[in-house]
Image (cartoon, rainbow over all chains, first blue to last red; front, top):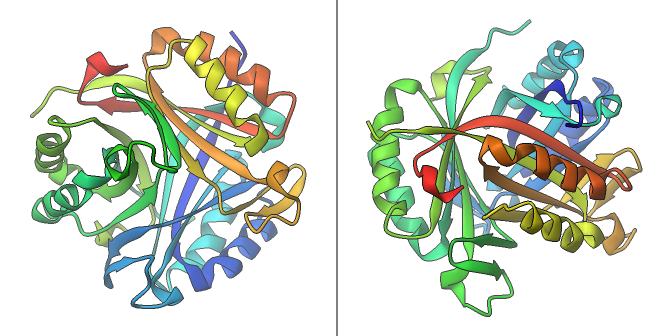
Length: 104
Length: 104
Length: 104
């Protein structure tokens, strides 16, 4: 069996207009990789939304997934929280095992 | 370090025509937020599908992610299972840590 | 409460041109279901990319999620790693609980 290494998976849901700022924070916190997925619809503290955009781009949410070493978690959470706390957004952290430890 | 709180992440894969019914069950079970992502392609017990839709909208799958307090998990799973058990679908629950406990 | 069963959730991020090969490996390793989601943008070891595709299809990443029994994990990881190790890609494994054990 290929050896696996424990890392942290950070999943962030953020309003589309804040995405660029969020990714900038990830970069500054030393995150080497992330994937962005567009939300189609959703519901949060500000009510329901969908990508057809009655509320415009502002209401659309983006899902950002990144995997990082636990050593970076504190800095990443603080950077992300700084963006997300001023808006609608979620930050959820879980344990994952990856095959290539050197990538994170 | 910002304090974090353990919650449950529920990930549901459901056929597009059942999405509205599923979201209604989440609402009724007290889920305050969720994000819907459109599947591009996939494979399940009913065979392979893709979003170009040879099988039409019925074959398309949606991914719904929500984070909730463990206290609500039983009610949510029952509501969701009620929708998913009659169709193709998956419900997977995992532990996550979030920064804003009051949101869930 | 509906009984739940522990399974493994495997999340793979892979370049679009390698998707077909990856899904073929999942099939051969006995994976009965997966969902593919298109990445909108991201950053990896090869730099940043987005779906508007300056780098063309080659640069676009796909997210593949599958849930499987732990008994299959070794074979799946080996098949997936064989595809991903030659390219940009991530394989992350976590624990999940599902309601329908017979599906995986």
